[in-house]
Length: 224
Image (tube, rainbow, N blue to C red; front, side):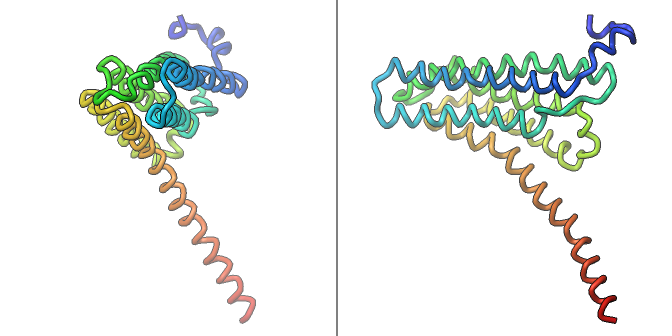
């Protein structure tokens, strides 16, 4: 229905700042399921150091999904075309479902904190959900207005997220102990974020260099 909308109907499909904010709030609400899952898991297990450690790591994994979405795609408007608008809206569906799946898997991760290997269902749902979040966020980013101006960041970032998603699937297949699995996912989710931070720092350094040079030349001219 969205894809076959007439030009007049397409006006109603335009993405406003208010709509991006509401989509972001919805993602935050779904991300709350990760915390709920951890709390639910802790409520059914004896409290000890290992269980608490797994619960804490699981919460950090949820934060990783949070910073992946909001650092790279959240609160940003798509290009003002019908195709980009439709893509922006539809890609939020698997993205939200993946975040909800991660939250559901947190319960099993905490409940099996003392197991030598994470249960297959929990490992696949959690790692698969993480992989979908990474890939869906990048697909979503291709519809944004900032994709082309910031292609120096987004294109290598998209390739990195695909590689990290494949590694997440590999972790799900390996099924290490819950604590190890959670720590590995935290590290993997930190890779795209680290790449973005490094890019921003280097870009700011390059943009600051011409300004410093211009100030120096101006001072030299004044002395002359």
